[in-house]
Image: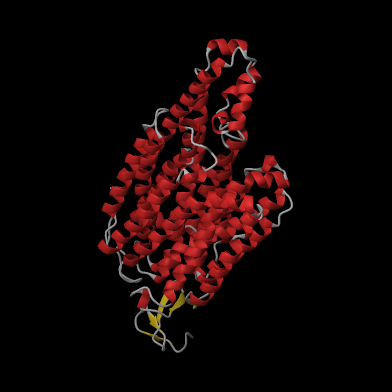
Amino acid sequence: MALSRQAKTSPETTVADDGASVIPHGNSVVNHSDSAAGQGPLTGKRIWVLVGILFGMLLGSLDQTIVGTAMPRVISSLGGMDYYSWVFTAYMLASTTSVPVFGKLSDLFGRKWFYLGSLALFMAGSMACGAAQNMTQLIVFRGLQGLGGGSMMANAAAIIGDIFPPAERGRYQGLMGGVFGLSSVIGPTLGGYITDQLNWRWVFYVNLPVGVIALFILLWAMPRVRLTERRSVDYLGVSMLIAATVPMLLALSWAGTEYAWASPTIVGLLAFSALAWVALVLVERRAKEPILPVDLFTSNSIVSVSSIVVFLTGAGMFGAITFIPLFMQAVIGTSATNSGVMLTPMMLALVFSSMVGGQIISRTGKYKGVAVVALAILTFGMFLMSRMTEAATYGLVVRNMIVVGLGLGVTMPLFMITVQNSVPYSKLGIVTAAVQFFRSIGGTIGVAVFGTFLTSSMQRELATAIPAQLKAMVPADQLKGILDPQALINPAALAQARAHLSPALAPLFDQVMVGVRHAIAVSLHDVFWAGALAVAVSLVATFFLKEIPLRRSHHGAVR
C-alpha cells in the first residue's frame, strides 16, 4: 500500500489515508497493512512474515549443525586438513562480529532490505561453498556465509518485535527457540544423510530452495520502510568493534589448541582486543549514532543485567553442552555413529519449554519470576550433570539433559523480550543484537576456557591411570597412543592402540582403558561443575532484574 497523504494523529503514530497502521522506525516510517500497531490476531501478512522469518532462522541455525557431519568428506575431497577448524572459525568470526553492526544499521535504515539482503548473501555464500575447489575458497566463502547469517540472526528477533508488541512476543519468539532446538536435533543426521546419499556439496546447496521460498515470502509480506531523515553511520565505531571482537575470538578459538594460553600470540591478541574495547567505549561516547551505545548499558539496568545473565548462561551452558557427546561416547560407551541423536532429549525439552515459557510470559505479562524459576531449573540440571561418574547409565544422562533443556529453553525468548520491552522502539534492533552478541561471546569463552580446563585436568588424571609395569615396559611413543582419549570414542583408534602392545602386555589393556575412562569422567565432572557455577551466578544476577509491565503497543511508556 502506498504511503500517501499521511495525516499525523500523534507525535509517535502516523496513519496512512488507507487506514493502514504506520509505525515510526527511528526516523523512518513502517507501513503495516494489518491490525493497528502490530496488535490483534495473527492474520494477514503478519503470519507470512513470521513464516518467512522462521524459514530464514532455520537456514542459519541448521547450517551450524549440518556442516560438521560432512567435514570429513570435505577434507577427503579438497584436502587441507591443517585448515579444518578455519571452516568453522571463519563463519563464527563473521557472524558474531556482524550481529551488533547490522542490528544498529537496521534501526537506522529499516529491517526489510537488510534482512532480505542478508538472506541473499547467505544463499550466495552457500552456493559458493558448494562450488569451492579448495579449502582456501571454502574458508573465504564460509566467511561470506557468516556475514549473511549474522545479519539474519541480528534482525530476525527484531522483526518479530516490529510486528508484535512486547506483551505478544513471547508466544512467537518461543517458536524461534524451537527452531534452534529442531536444527540441533535434525542437523547432524540430515548432514550425514545428504553426504552419504548425494554429495557433501549438497550440504550447502540444500539452503537454496528454502532460502528462495523465504525470500519471496518476505519480499511480498514484510512492511515497507520510508526514510524521513538522512542518518549517519558510525564507521569508526564499526572499525573499533571489529578490531576488538576478531582478535578476541581468534585468541579464544586458538588458546589451548593451536597455542598455549601464555604464548605471545594469544597474549598479544587478547591485549590488542582489550585496548580496542577501551577505544570503542571512548569512540561510542562521542558518536552521533553509536553502533553499540554505551548508555544502553549504563543507564538501563534491565539491559545490563540481562546482558550479564545471557553472557554467563552462554558461557556455562553452551561451553558445557559441547562436551556432553564426549561423556556419552567416552564414558558411557555410546556409539559415535548416531552422535546427532545424543542431544535429542535435551533439545526436545528445550523446544517444549521455549514455547511454553513464551506462552506464560505473554499470558501473564510477567518475566522476572519465570526467569528465576528457569535459571534455578538450569542450575539444578547442571548440578546433576556434575554429579555423573563413570558408573552413570544412559538413562541417567538423558534425565539430566532433559532437566537442563527445560531450564535453558525458557531463557532463550525471555531475555530477548525483557530487553526489547525496556527500550524505545527506535533502539529495538541494537538491543536485540546485543543480547545475541553477548550470548555468542559467552559461549565462545565457555568452550575455550572449559576446553583448556578439560585438557589440563585430563593430563593430570591420566598420569595416575597407567600401571607402573606398563610405564616401565612400553616405549613413550606407544604409551602416548594408548593414553589417547580418542581411543575410547573411535573404534579404529582403539584397535590401533591395542595393536601397539605385545601379547604379554595385552591383559593390561582393559585395565588401562578403565583408568582412561575414569580420567575423562573426573575431568568432565570438573567442566560440568564449572558450568553449574557460572549458571548459578547468572541466577543470582537475575534477582537484580527490574520488572516493568510488558507494553501492549510499540509505543507504550518505557520506565
